[in-house]
Image (cartoon, rainbow, N blue to C red; front, side):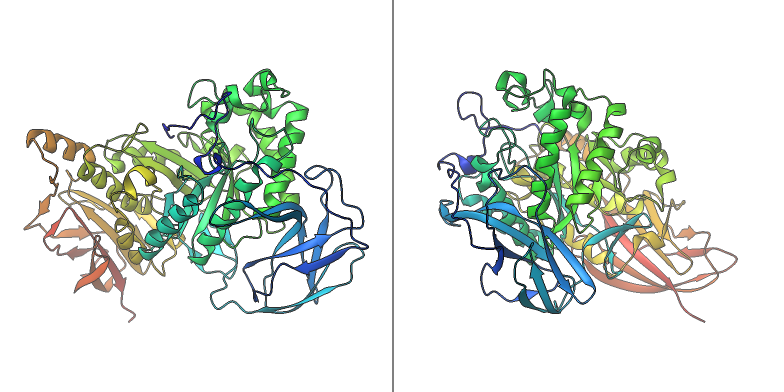
Length: 579
């Protein structure tokens, strides 16, 4: 949950800094074409697995730009059919964000294989296009066996981070995302979470009539560009469609400015009615169809998130189940690529929530300066029955929901723990940290992701079972299967709370740092192990480098692991040699 500062634009409207300097484009009615046509936007080569766009013209242009039944465009190659829905589009200049050209109808496609394709809409003559093979084409990310895989079966472990929005002015929004994506990807990052909030990429707010997104086509275009930047760097995005504040009167409240509010001309007397009022349901379903038409074809789209922390709204949880089912059906019909769907609460709750709700991915959010391992242990136990079914993400984590710790070294300890611990505790990947724009980027914390990304590279976490080794003078977490063991060993006091206490005891200064040497450690007995000889390779969690090697022999189901000296934490991989 974010304690944030918003920019007021007068009359109570809350807008992103990226929109405040320019007037919205006014809707125009294009000249009707003599017939249905589909044409390429430009001559850029089309690559399998990547988004490309076409312009659609119609004999009679619908007067309703955003409502009504979808108009589908079909792309075929042999027996393979891919559909895309037409949507209303305005282009913008990337440097000034001024409208560029006339608004028009577009369609987005992501074609799964190379070859010759024909594209048609209604009675249009076919547009024939040649699609080249993508060198790294793996398809979209799916859920499988409690984890994630690409369409081609390659395991996907989300090395993730929240990158929810930028409040920079104008085109600097795109510059921010380029900088963040470049630094993140260079250190192994491959997943992020972005909100369609009123102050960022939201397309419907008090400055728009309900159901008319014309005044916010700039935000939609910016989201297109951000998704394109992510795709270019191999990063996938969880798109959050609704933030809690928009329908809250108490927590980050924005209800007073919400266009669904009766006081603003909307249909709702209170925010809880959003999930039950037929008019609200119809209007939101329309928005979902529009967003899916624009975004679903992006190679960067990982999954849809209905709500961020819906428990901060007055909507009762029992009312969400039928709403989820209704809106899942809307999205399934609008998203030809069938991306996974999720939603979040401020904590995961217990397994019953995820067993009852029609959501493909379970999520947990965690804030507080306590030991991440201790905090996550109760969540792991509560959600144990989900193992092998729904992936579990620690999709928000931070020292505090109120802001990063003013002592960067303390927050860095918390970040390091949040990145490493979840992998060994039944989560589908590392924790996705918060405070990207106020702490991670300004203090260049990107290197923390390098170690975990390299350690789990080429692994499939669903092939392992978490366990807690004993006999180590600190914290030991492990993953194992019949052939391999992965271990993370950490000093017991390498936690943010211990760092905070030490900082106060030592009257730390601006260059203060926290470290816990672990020396002259007793060997640790690992059990149970399948008897045999194991190759042991140690790993530096900070540099991301594999280091010293050794051998361990397991006899009668146990083996003795000699532990080298280390500072703060280390990791190790044991692989049983084939006889």
